[in-house]
Length: 186
Image (tube, rainbow, N blue to C red):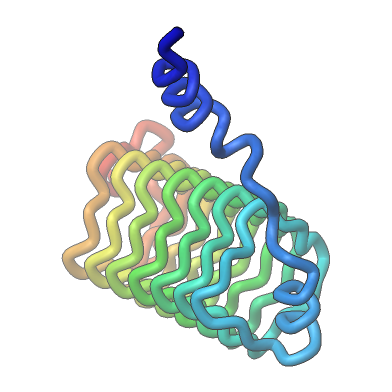
């Protein structure tokens, strides 16, 4: 009997579901030292944790629970936060250069003066998020939900806003975008 198809099925479809979350040692190191470079912390729970000033550059937070987490002035350069739950997270003045935030839920998150140069924020969910004074130069915001967000003073130079929902958002110049705004503030 050929077991190859069964193995392939398990590898392709069940692997993400059986991948263990971070080792307790890595979690403790981050909590105590506020540093964990290129760590695998996928599927971990950081809800309400204060990791302000942490350096987690290159870390893999895929599908992590991070509601209300505080990452003020933290370094998340080239980190993967794809599909993370970051509702009401505080990322003010955080460095997210080149970070992967695709489909991350940033509802009501604070990214004031955040540095998101070249970040991939495709299909990010960020209604009512605060991007005041954020540096979003070259960021990919394709299909992002930015309805009701504050983008006043943000640098959106070369940012891609294709199909981004902008209804009710406060634009970079302080005007409020019309409800039907998509891809550009109208």
